[in-house]
Length: 231
Image (tube, rainbow, N blue to C red; front, side, top):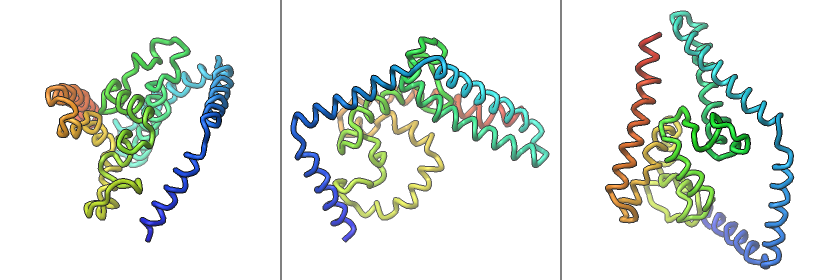
């Protein structure tokens, strides 16, 4: 019954979309362009100051968190250090890295805060993520068969995805995906399933995999070997 309701709602949305005329779509596009132009016109020094402040806060939290963990034998220092590092990681990945790699701050022409030079604190190399996220996901957002981020090839979240009994277990392996998301994305960005289907060569896939594993190994060394040994 639930699946039938999902399909009915999806068909209703599709019917509504199909009722749009070419003129309706063009007008919608013009309205979006107008909003974009208005937003771009407001960019200025306040925005530049904001991203630089966020970067400074993030680096301060990371340095402070590492310092606190050097005395982690004390429970308050362990808790505060862990909280500081967790917050620094979230800021770096989501508010800084994600947006910088999107090109959101390229207008500043700052070579240190630019989508072509930024390398984030994440296991996936910036260039690999930019291809899978910026190009594939944002070109074909929520288009089944095009957008690989629909369920990350592991979860059934779309009514037109073919059902398989393995999806009965997805509440459980979704927890594992959440826990190891960074590392899952690291392999996912290589698009091994495309090589399996013959859509790309295994030579290309393995070359990309070596690059990804190189970045991931450095991430493991920093986060789980070098700094823990220092503390």
